[in-house]
Length: 79
Length: 208
Image (cartoon, rainbow over all chains, first blue to last red; front, side):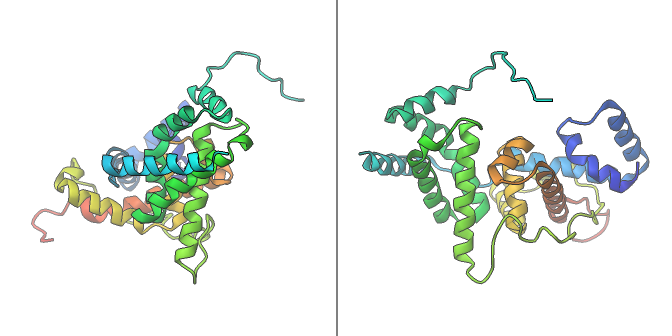
C-alpha cells in the first residue's frame, strides 16, 4: 500500500467500513510509514475534538426564545 | 433484475408517527419535532454561516418552511435529513447574500487539490485539548473551521459534528456519495493540518 492509497482508505477506515484484508494493509502501512502513522493518529484526534467539544454554545435562553418564535410563526400561518 | 422489495418489518423511526400527526394539524406533534431538532439545526446553520444572528434566522426559517411544506415530505428519507437539507440550503443562500461579489455553493473551491496532501507530520502532544482552557479551545476550533471553504465545512459538519452517515449527508446536500467522501477527506486533512499548529509537540529545548 502506498501513502496515496492509504489516504484513499482513511475515511472508510474511520467508519469501520474496510474489509479485513484492507485493514491489515492499512495497519502494515502505518507500521512502516511514520508520516502516515502521524496522519492517522492526528486525524482521528481532529475528529474527536470536534465531536466532543461544543464549538458553538446554544444557551437555554436562546433556545427558548427561538423555540417560541418558531411556534408563533407556525401558528400564525395556520389557517 | 428488478430488486425485490423487502417485506421484513423494519423498525419504524418514532418521527414517522409525529410527522403523520403534524400533517393532520397536530401542532403539539410538530412542536415535539422542533424540540428534538432545534439544537441540531441551529448548530448546522452556525457552522456553515459562522454567524450567530444568521443561524437564529435560519433556524426559524427552516422550521417554518418545513411546517409549510410538510405535505410534500414523502418519508423517503428521515425527517431529520429532510430538515437538515432545508437548513443547509437556507444557510448557503445566506452566505451568498452576504458575499455579494463571490458565489458560494457546494462546489466552491473544491476543484483545487490544495489541502489534500498532508504536509505536517509532527506528532501532537498527549491530550491536546487540555493544553488550553475551554474558551481558548473553543476559539481555536472556531477559527480553524472558519478557514475551510463552505463546501468542505458543510460536509465536515454533517458527517463529523452531527454524525450523519455518508448517504444521509449526500442526500441532505444533493451530492453523490463519492463527492461527499472526497470532500470529507480533504476537510479532515485540512483541519488536521491547521490544528497541528496548536497541538504539535514542540522539539525539546525549542522556544515557541
